[in-house]
Image (cartoon, rainbow, N blue to C red; front, side, top):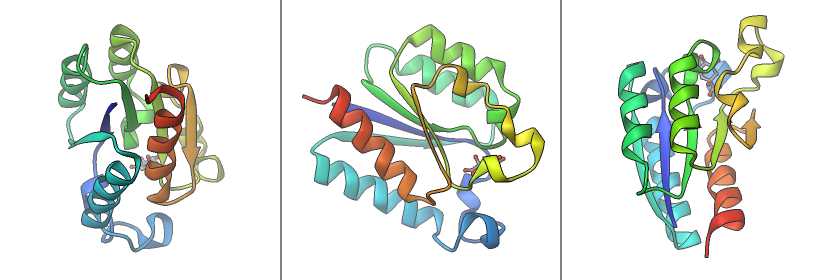
Length: 144
Ligand code: DQA
């Protein structure tokens, strides 16, 4: 199966960014984990990170007919983006939402997730390991 991993704004700053919240693992550590998980599971993985909402919408649209599952951490767009939610609904690809931090234990504005209205599963507060868990979930459910 082919899995698309999508990351929103500031995820490329992992390691530097608020380590007390997001931990010390770097963005490169995350990319390595995704590649390693893909190898272990025997799946293909594509990764894309953008600080721009429309780019993320474009990637979701481009996934139509090519991708079997999406792992998405829209970062701050989680809490604001109807456009990303609508793109996921348009392509109808199974999707899992990931958050590195435990958003439930943070500010009230982080309790709202628009993509969560589409995603069939959500992993939060597990650090970068959440991406591995999300890939495993999709492979178990949809892989052949
Ligand atoms: C985040 C949580 C969001 O609230 C925040 O805006 C992020 C990262 C997470 O992975 O914990 O940028 O999605």
